[in-house]
Image 1 (tube, rainbow, N blue to C red):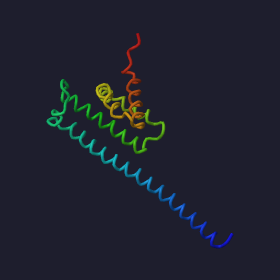
Image 2: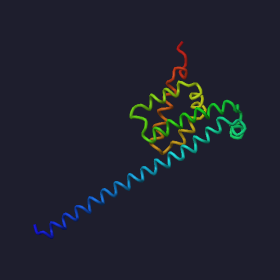
Image 3: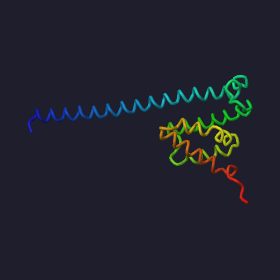
Image 4: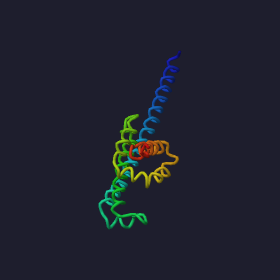
Length: 155
């Protein structure tokens, strides 16, 4: 092989490697930006839920018709816990296989089960088309239905 051919081949290999590394870096940057966006949106939602679950006058404006304001405030607090778990899951901080355990722990709380009975269907609608959110919702729904107090008493 001539020296010029070897130099051209080496240059092409370096250029190709640089392009592959650059593309991988762009993909990683895009993923990190998506994660930052999700965290910012979740922070906004959690702030709003914190405010709504502690300010009766504000909560009264948003309380569904026929529901007690105090009950709605409690359900919003449960939603806040579920949203925090959802964010942890979306950002990869819930280890593989541990989501059912976390969901079961949440559903140990009566207020979380009440929230899920009242608003779980909305979370399922919101999750449609997002595989990870659909999985999260299915796991929480299963935990709610499998809780001993959710099952009918044996005869």
